[in-house]
Length: 376
Image (cartoon, rainbow, N blue to C red; front, side, top):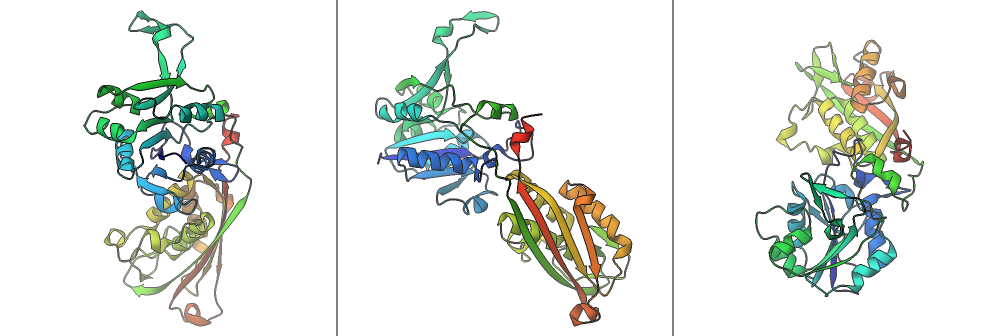
């Protein structure tokens, strides 16, 4: 086993990718791409020291997928890398972007065989087209297109990044302090996913599985006099509301739990704890929007939701269509994919005694199918 730590950088927001899902969360069959790459390199290179750099909001969810070291990313690639390097104690460190998925065995073998030959090992591609820069011809034989992964002596890379200068890759930083570089032949298949169309150029991943995932949410709130009532994202014209830390929209709370349950990410109380003053009197539509945004960003689509409101009072039927419209806008799915049912409990239990409302919600979701997008 090499004295080597692998750092995979994936804290970006994929703004140039042009879809709701972040590219690192697109699925190859059942695996998000960050996990696909981590497992691929772990098995090929026999590396146990693997650091995943990610958005801090995604790290708790990532821990459900793999036993790696997770580090919060910074605003820029270099800050993310510096955060990760604090966890590295091995002699060498390999750094790669999660967006560079298809790494051939021969390419990786060339990298590993070159460890120790210089302060940093850098793969590159030659340029075959004519190159002009500011209306001047450049000798294309001297132009190198730099790729990742790159393997550095850890102490050299830490020293190279110990300043405020921003570098676009590790080799630029090492070169700036006079470090030695060994260039090796890169790979045409090691395409970096920057735009959605780049998925057409990769052949190592498969379309996502067509599995469906269901989640069940259930919530209860008792009534409170002299408070506005919000239910299903709609203001209800009554003189009482719900006793709760937030606005108490029990229907949206149950829906949040149904969506979170479908992706295996805990419950609304974990994300928005009732002892956190940030959520005091919070608009539950905003809480639901946060859940939906997260769900889409980590690579899922919402198929449909079904909500059952159990209430002796108030009357729900006059508001059902408004509720569906409100929820449709937040979930970004058609109204016909949203169902709301209302029932009494025949005057049984706390609902029947008109002390509060209970709601049950069920959701169905699936993986975002990126393979359909690249056919457009």
